[in-house]
Image: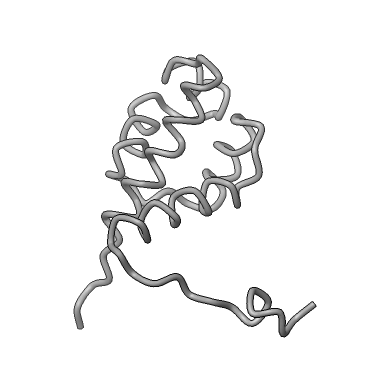
Length: 98
C-alpha cells in the first residue's frame, strides 16, 4: 500500500508558521521557548520536515495568538493556488447547511 505524502502541505503549513512568527518579530529560539518546543524542532516544522502533532499545533497557535484554523486555512489556500486544483465545496459553503 502506498504511503500518503503531504510534503507540499507540510511545507506550506510551516511557511505560514514562520510568517506569523516573523510578524511577531520573534526569533526561532524565543518562539520555541514560548511554545515549549525545542528550537531545532521548530525549524524542522517551518521547513516542512516534520509532521507536527495536533497538541503541538495548539501550542504553536497559542504562542502566535491565532486560532489553529488560520494556519490550516492559509496553508491550504496556498496549496490550491499552486496546484491549480479546484476548491472543494462543502455543503455549508453551498448554502445547504446553516
